[in-house]
Length: 177
Image (tube, rainbow, N blue to C red):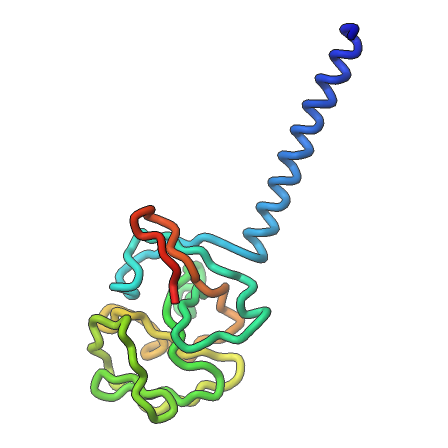
């Protein structure tokens, strides 16, 4: 092969690498924007389920394709500090009536079993109806969580997605229920 042919092959190889890198960047941007995103847990409101510093993967399509379910963990734009994202557990979905009395959560008049709650101390909350387009969310560490018991109903439009996997630190990798 001549020097001229080698230069053309070399340029072709570089162009292929550049095209591949650009495609990878575009795909990564699209996936992060519309499908999956990683969030870091800050604070103690979800203890013992999530530790401060845990990193979770969030399915951003989950609620475009289906409705939130009681017990799922969601990431949402804070209704109090809009520049922050918070993470809590869904307790009430549209159509539910939620009440907290003597540290027990009642959904539609029935006690809700919460094996994930180690610290159940809670303020009492009067019966609250969850209308369409809203959720009732609470942290698993009730004494240390600022949640729907304080700020009220969470608009679905503020929900970024469902947390489904702790991926960091490596010794804590697990699926979230």
